Image (cartoon, rainbow over all chains, first blue to last red; front, side):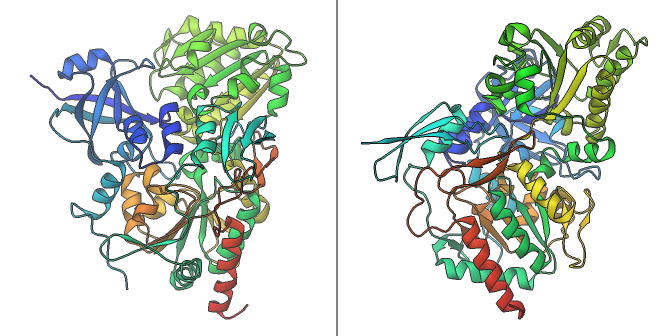
Length: 141
Length: 439
């Protein structure tokens, strides 16, 4: 039985994401380091999410499939964390409250278990979100 | 025989470690080993030698594939784009040298673009607060040699600035801090029990986005007034104890990061952290330092400030004078409101690090990405111009997070035929002058 759960999401750097970024943003290492969501065990149980399975994270600005992992750096129940990168930024709002700074931390997301859905690669994800399913860039003169 | 180059500066984070030892092959073309760097720094140096690097500009074809073009063609495309566009956004700068920035700004001034750097999604809020209330700060050397009370607020150097703790803030022994870690009291305030918090004497877990309230409680306690039983999820006793610990020190410092700048309240969070620092100076010596992320994002702020008077979000489109209005002239807002009709991303990555709504507009307008490696912006740009890697293949000046300029060294030769940022920008400038008819 899977339920949806609403959590407060933050996005920020992890050292794994930092190292992988230098290896290359198209690398498997980057995919493994950034296409995940850290969750508290209690929240996983509540939503019927098994560790290391895929989940769909939805905010008012978008939706993305990532892998749910147990938090290493302990989060409070109710909070979740996606490392910075295209997966996190698929659901971050670009609204800046006139400060220039988007809201990278502290916005509500809905999380549901989708064990059979695929996580998109970094380039595939960005191109799909920018150009649509066919990933066809706009024509230039 | 290989040779070892000592005192190399690491071009990854704002800590700018300058004690790296890089072993290079005899012909000076390959990096063999990297000593003293953190996991991220050594990956940066060792990654250079890996196969598959793009060494010539690429232009996107209508079917979405990329075709190799010459530098001349790429420069022509960029200069024509700059000349034609009504309002160009030129974002990035944080991973190149100050010398390249100065040349880039010359081009930006000529074309009338907006120049913005990574502070816009990073410490922009801090810059706003510093302009409002000032900043009592100090250098890293002072912290290493004097600080016996260190407060990390909303930052996680164990992950984002891996050698910060061992070089400056927690572990090193200095002139007046001869006991090193044992002589210092470390307090970490964060919404997560981070790896940095695991090194702390006291960890205060604040409810996410309640930093302003807790900082306000710190100020109230420091001034001797009562506070509620629980503030932002933190019990009163914990706050009182932390403030007492800080007051007892001889030299205290606050490091703050994205935990304050990205959460609700933005610049007001920094504002009150600075004011708390000011309050603490009634009892002891106290300083505050922003944990700047990219290795030369501080440098971009410095160069823009001495050229135009503003550290980021500089609007040069009026051509007569520079304007500055974060919220209006900031990259994310400009892209979200679709106010720019061309974009250049240099030494940074919009595709990976901007909210998708902003990235989407960037992908829909003519765009050029100047970056040594393939990243997510290169894959949604019309033209990708690879350049030599500053701090590894090109020397240059960078500013550490405490605004101290440090020279970056060249350790290996760049791949043959590849241009440096400076050469590329100079050539774009020359071509732009020809097109605009006043060389």
